[in-house]
Amino acid sequence: MTKYVIRRLVQVVPTLWGVFTILFIIAYLMPGDPLRAVLGEQYHRLDPAVVEAAKEEMGLNDPFHVRYAKFLGDLLSFDLGYSYILKQSVADVIGYRLPRTIQLMTGGLLVGVLIGVTAGVIAAERQNTWSDYGLMIGALVGVSIPVFWQGLLAQLFLTQDRYGIAIFPVAGYEGGSIIHMILPSLVLGTSLSATLARVTRSAMLEVRGQDYVRTARAKGLPWHATLIRHQFRNALIPIITIIALDISALFTGSIVTETIFSWPGLGRAVVVAIERRDTPVFMGILVFGALVFIIINLLTDLLYALINPRIRYE
Amino acid sequence: MSIRAAERKVVAIEPLPEKYPSNWMRFWLSFRRSRLAMTGLAIVIVMSTAALLADVIAPFDPVEPHYSDRLVPPGGAYVLGTDELGRDIFSRLLYGARISLVIGLVAQGVSVSIGIVLGLLAGWYGGWVDDLISRLIEVVWSIPGLMFLIVVVTIFEPTPLTIFAALGLIAWPGQARLMRGQVLVVKGMEYVAAAQAMGASTLRILIQHILPNAIAPMIVVATLGVAGAILTESTLSFLGLGVKIPNPSWGTMIDIGRNYTVTAWWYAIFPGLAIMITVLGFNFIGDGLRDALDPTQYD
Image (cartoon, rainbow over all chains, first blue to last red; front, side):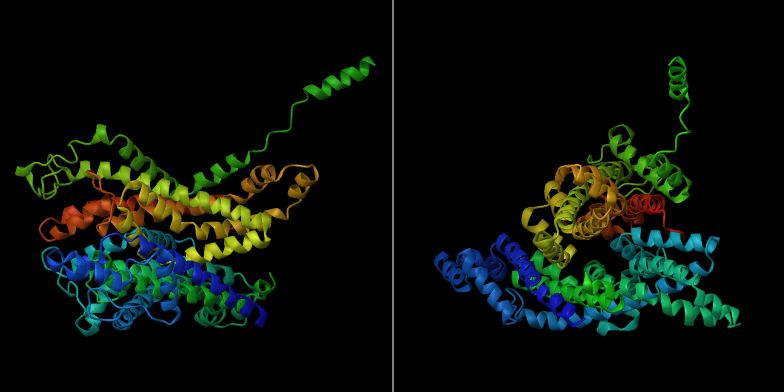
């Protein structure tokens, strides 16, 4: 196992390098003068010589390899740079926004797990009945519905009286109150719940045919005891794996959800930063996001290896 | 001698044993039994026909404004109502189907092609080729997809070509990984060894023996991938980064329509329904394919 862990850790280095290089090339190709973004209207009134000097100072005139080396060097010293527009370092932007995104993702995760696992267990218990078919079609609808459209539907029917009832606020954060969290969490968690429902169902069915379940039933345990202690516990591995893999999907989903519900998280910040050509901010968040993805992939692989020893010797 | 000849003749005209259904036939019989899959197929056929015949079916020009008929509710001459410039939403949806379907299919085509080629190479050659491709898979896998797409489309302008390429270039790692795994299994089969022993070239083995036997799960994943690509394209359009052509894509319609949700609910509702139904169609088919192509699936 130790050998496998070390090998897997070493593999992260070229991956990081590859991701950073691709991201750097994207930033390098970014059109639009960032100075224009920083200075706004003032840009046109400035002396071209001053503009040129500022560009020189910001390193925008340096050749490709110099900027590339600086980019990698900054990353190695954990320096994500300063926003062109906000008077903040990118690390501060992330530090402020990340907890809010995590809060939203936690909400989505809760919704996804509660609805998805429950639906999956019920569908497996009632295999080949109408409730099973209904739930599984519902799950397919759940993965087919565009996140942004679902958000609009929620806003149309649950936030105003004209077509629905005004139960929830349309959007906003308000210190992250529960009432503001409900709709975004529901919207974000739908697709996860749909995926989980399907995985839970097939995992439960797979376990149901096992001898130990039959033995447990035969010795007279009530069905709920066998369901939870014998079936569900053994069906957990695929369920947890899917949850781990879907954390990245939740992160992606939060971009759209935050945009619709004006949630002050990382996803919203990325969209705004790209609109304003605030390269350091969106690059910083992209780099950060990629790091999170790499860590999740690493952990998932190690988890697999822990569960399934054959992988270690591949 | 003459008896022998007669025997031979008898053998020759003896009817062949009843033909076993071919693999494709067996697949089709199994696929046809799935009601969901057939529903999905019907949805996709209807949507494709609508897209192909948009010129014929559409009651109005999709871009021509009718200023006296702005935001007319559904019913009457405008089946699904009109938008803020008095354009017929039904006609616009028909033309929008072209964009969604073409982008979904082409982008997924790009992605699957990359996935198949890299998966074949990594699985077949192993060694440093495999190491290199596996690193590449992980690199692309680690880039947050939607963020990457937003940035790329901002840089290169949202032409159809950019969107095909960007969607295709970000979606292949899962498919390459799957293909690689498949190849590793098939590579150990006896018929591959037999083909090698008979001196078949590597290319021939890859195309004639490995590919057909490794492709089944790829077909499923590709079908589901079309659904995913349509969703992603609509998300980009919704964020204002859709294809810039006069005929709007469904996502763009929702993006504009959401400003009118309170005054004209139909504006943002119908394009969303169109996306959902189309995506559902591909997901139904993908599900049916999975069951039909996988003999080990029992639930």
